[in-house]
Image 1 (tube, rainbow, N blue to C red):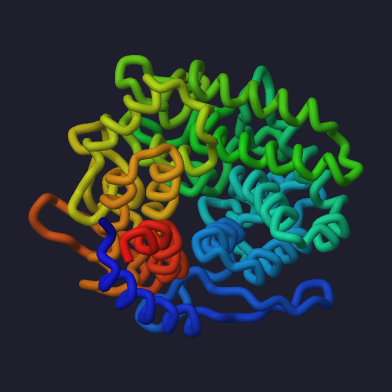
Image 2 (tube, helix red, strand yellow):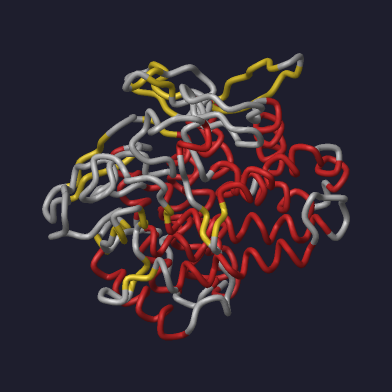
Length: 392
């Protein structure tokens, strides 16, 4: 059972922080109301990130933020190939500011933003904003063109060669954008398991749109491609030894490990997508990630594990929403309740970006005020609202 007093207490504090993170930006003559991603010691540490904004809108269930973020994604959508920034036609931007790193820029260093944007289009269409979506048909088609250029043999492959580069500024290009275990850089092309699930969800959203819009791909092609990627996720990207999704696959082979990605994928899939045995294996193996404050990004005693690492052992509060929501929809309420315990960390220290837990001590890390951490109490309340109604 979720701690409703804790939810309400952190909810109030989180809403106050969201007010501090509010910002506006003018792009091509349009004024957008958005949020900076993070503050540190009172100063802006992270600005506008499409991924952070979209995921925050999903957590909050906020139609207005979702519309504003989709506008932002469309206004900045890639138009050409650029080896320096990672830009490709139809690709959805990662970071609005021009941040230089390792001789390149991070601006388009994300392969998950595009399927997430398609998912957002689908959500808005389903919520009654069909005119808003139809008006942006060309952007939907651009995103689909980008995806299909990356899909081969039922797998979405990330490859800097498609923008004319040999690597990106960031070491990996999904939300865990630091090192993968055992790799300084992926041996491209690389397929991230979580991105496969996000692509399945994005293509399914596009399939719904195709019933009402003139898209470059028909419903059957979108459905068949989504099914093929799902099949690959459960076969080519499945670690049989661990009974868990691999983290990724590159030219050197599977990149394995017990990672929160395996739980996170459930948010983007639907009941019936996973065979019972595989679903039960994910749920049982996830106990290796469990802590008193939610689920770690990566289990102990594995290659490159460190409890205070950015993505290989730390806990990220925002991810607990996606883990909890996925667990609930697949029938694992206890797993969802354990994910909700991240609110204990936020209540104790504030809305930090991430935390390290060494089995004895919890340490706040990264930005001391993070957008998607501030959203978590609202998201957890939404997940468990029905449970409370049933007990009142």
